[in-house]
Image (tube, rainbow, N blue to C red):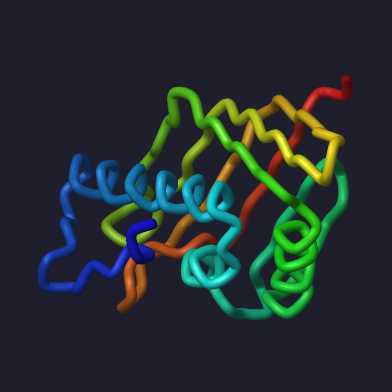
Length: 144
């Protein structure tokens, strides 16, 4: 797994095409971090602040502390995670902010049981000194 986006400001692109490429790279890192079940890799991709929000299937979590605990529990319980992202649509909101929406399929295996989710994920990202970080996430999926 490559390290989380570490784009120095001098090398970061302010062009819309550059922002799109950087954000898509961060989304790929996020996907890979789930698949290798690395809490360290995931943690580097989220804003560690009280305003961070994550909504999954109608459940709201606010603030890095609660989201970190939920991510850690999800990773710790899983014996395998597979995430597929299809056709991400990224909109640059300027040189340091973007919103991305994509179809996402996630399979989480716990022992002999695999739960499959298919839905849409929306990520709001902000570029800071370390690179792009997630400041809001929303994932809704169809029930089997």
